[in-house]
Image (cartoon, rainbow, N blue to C red; front, side, top):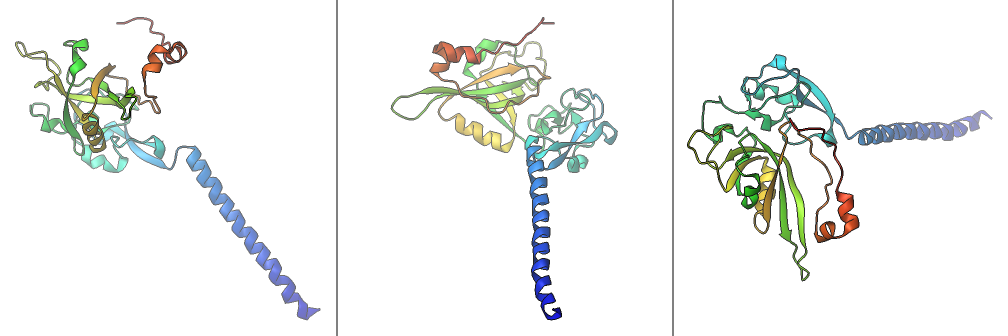
Length: 259
């Protein structure tokens, strides 16, 4: 009997080891699933501890670390580990408490330096585009405004289908024509057929390619509206001329009044 005991214990030990390994793998899978369901691994970003007016230099007391799921982090947002790079840099716009800090919110040099390159934050790019449809906005565009960029072009192929796609969202205007001031000087020309946008490197490449064969249109947005909508559909003739599809696209937004 005793000679058979070891042979009995070996399968039992193997079964326990396999069961233990299964529990470890299951726990690892559950953690990974929970992480993906929550939007990925947590990333620490810089956010504003309090309101900061445009032109004020940032210091450590103004900033806090704010954790965001990886899937919701944009390349323009400032990581908490990059804190030393923003200390002493002036805010290009008014910043609100609890707002995550973006490179596009910062001016790289003091405001009295009137050069375009001085207003481009590190890691960002400035690109000018012709805006043929700008007459619809008249003289209302100003440096510091935020816009969406729409691209209308004909798709390759025999049918020549024309589509409009939301190419870029929440883009900061660095300049309008030759003006980089938020208010125009008296006597300065107020009309221009081109504007200069502040973009990431990837956005610059996207816009450069889009300019090759399509028409760009700017849609002005509220300066405090920083939301970027994911998964916006393209628009074609059927969305305009087919009643059912047109009705689906006309979402009603209640606006009580304009100040």
